[in-house]
Image 1 (cartoon, rainbow, N blue to C red):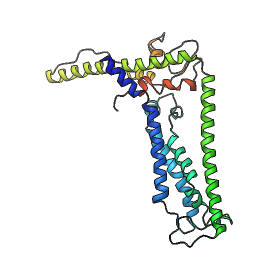
Image 2: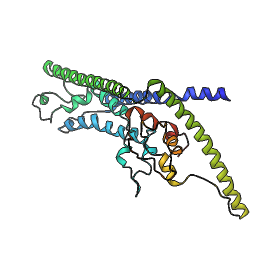
Image 3: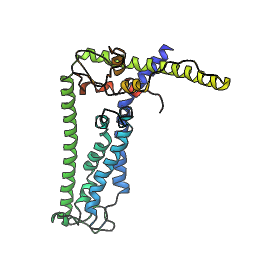
Image 4: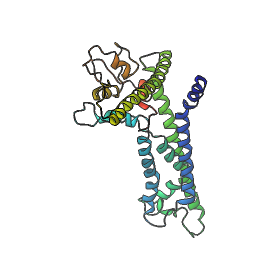
Length: 299
């Protein structure tokens, strides 16, 4: 059984990276199919606006599912906007995914179809007015000057695409380097921290399943026997809210999760959400992205 669990863990660990890679490939493939097989730039003044719409609006459409399907979104968002809740909803917007939108824009710029359409007749540029609409049905052969202009526009689009890709890579490199450099703990402690979170998730799920099973059996038994249930200890709503809050780091008291922080509080009536010296550290964002916050229990 332990060997089977080890195999499952080995299979599940890289699933996030594989999932991001699959989303990127599907987005890139979908954009190329759409721009080459489906999209037709109209022979009208509306093509200027249409080119911009098909370049940016699908990216915005891909951003919303990426945000809503991200593992951290709903655990951090649930209950934050309820009346009487101190934490703001703005702190929950940390799980947005921009991989698919950036992929769409970059691939679209490298292809150049939408960029050409955005500069077709109807735009404000007199130079763009010399360009016949790309892929316009039954158009005559292009003069050499206009064909050269189309090639220049496609080259501009490809340059913008490569600039976007380079900018994203440089930003990610700088952001990762800075967050790691500003990490309050060492590299080996980070590795231990992640191991702890994996073990906490597994134990929490096992104990929660057992606890829920006992509670369900007691309730069903009392229903059929028409009796009153025995006293059953279970965390209160306030307890659940506290261990579900965003993780904050305090160098004075090192805790590896909100659950760890909750069970070690000195006064049982104290709140663990905000204390003197607590900070949200970007390098420790994996705490909210793992552990019991992203358990596999279906919702």
